[in-house]
Image 1 (cartoon, rainbow, N blue to C red):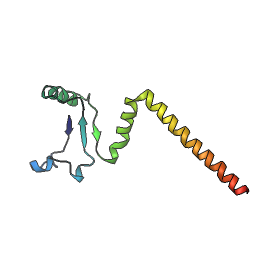
Image 2: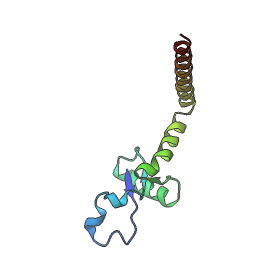
Image 3: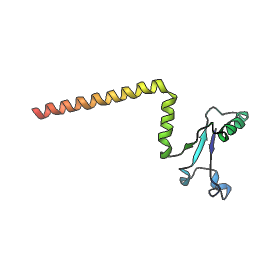
Image 4: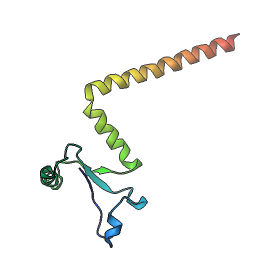
Length: 106
């Protein structure tokens, strides 16, 4: 389930609230991919009002928060993957700098 939150100033007409306009890039939304049935909708809305569903921001400003949540969802495996990527980058940088130093010596 995907729920947008708009201010009253933005919803002067019904057409303004139907889609996500470029002006709505900094608006909050609530999402729960597990809500797919009509009877789960009421529970989802109660959880939103109760603060149990975290608000998310659209666009580039919400990206760090979404990446952090995804990182934490896959916590043990994401740390291993992050360390592996950092080691691969470090090896590439060190190997590249040693090859550059050898080329300058010759």
